[in-house]
Image (cartoon, rainbow, N blue to C red; front, top):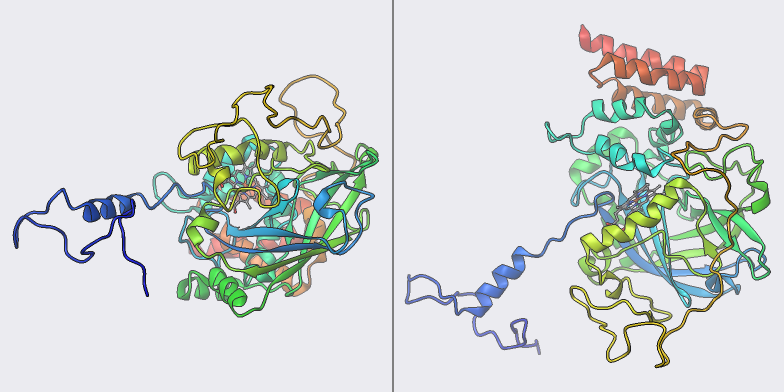
Length: 486
Ligand code: HEM
């Protein structure tokens, strides 16, 4: 038998189809609690969308350790082969607003929350191992250039390439984005990366710089520009549909998880700055070591509660894992929880999707809007004489040596650091056909830029990466632009 319909305070509702009126055909009555509450509630259904990565899909699952990594980290959830930890993963596109089409050329977010016994560990990565910029102070400008123009209200190729023409360090990620992997066929058919360098610390105190790789067991599948344009028009929710339906049918997507590990004392002399987010560590230098398996096996019951309200913060670490001095990461350590306090409120950590599951949160943070776990009668200060929660005195990660003067420094240059070498390496790795598609995609986008100075500023970057890359792209861009002029 169905339940009785009630108001929010639990009183029975007599009529959910006809508002109360002062006589047939008369005005409505303010005493109609169901009408007033229903309309007012409806007006408040939307919360601010994420400033980036607004459009996304999520699923629950688990992470299982398959290989012993205890020599490298003392993270409890990684300490035993066969151990499983519950996870929630949210995939996303970056630039589109809530409701934007999924099948677009854009990086994909790969945000993972491990509900560990030492608290939640959030690894907030992308499907790309690198990023466009390497200093967080540039992030708002970069994102503005990619989103809608304040005057035209549209995304503008002029803005996109104008910004990039002043940002040569973006070329590696641009080459990645306009290549085949720039439009994944679905969230199941792409890899995930932690992207940044993080720190692992073992029980004996030995420390490593670490990069995470999640390799899809479904195989990489991508869409070309034409296929994506058609799909985005026919089914804007294509990624959401694919993920949701696969899991409903019991086809559980999985990823094999690897790390690259660099002993901390090798960082200073490595040929690339290991904390530069626009660079990878070639596998020949630091090979992939398998750690475990990630499986998604349960759809959210309620998309708003679990996906829209999910809050991932790169600053949610657990003992044995810590940050690196990567400037971008350092900026992100601030930005996310700040965004959550704005978007979801100060008590967002008490929402079921964000609260720890395998342990409980015990601290002296109190009150604020919508406090659910108000701390009961326990004392709200520390230290106290009432057996309240105490600090452990055990360092979470290893200390990092620093030296020098405060100042607005650019990233430290290592022997092989330039903005173009790794972009050229990526280009040279591609098959002829892939290079053709990359150049056609880039030319299509750069070819639609209206300002000559922007085009002239950006083309030399491609020449600097690889002579063939530059020559072919320049010819393709000129052909489009000359055609447009004639
Ligand atoms: C300094 C650079 C960056 C800043 C300031 C920044 C800031 C933000 C902010 C404010 C959000 C919205 C958070 C929310 O409302 O819940 C967000 C979302 C996200 N960012 Fe970043 N971001 C940066 C770089 C990156 C990088 C390098 C990556 C990947 C390697 C990344 C991956 C993500 C993902 C996956 C999400 C969506 C998380 C979710 O699914 O809820 N971001 N970012």
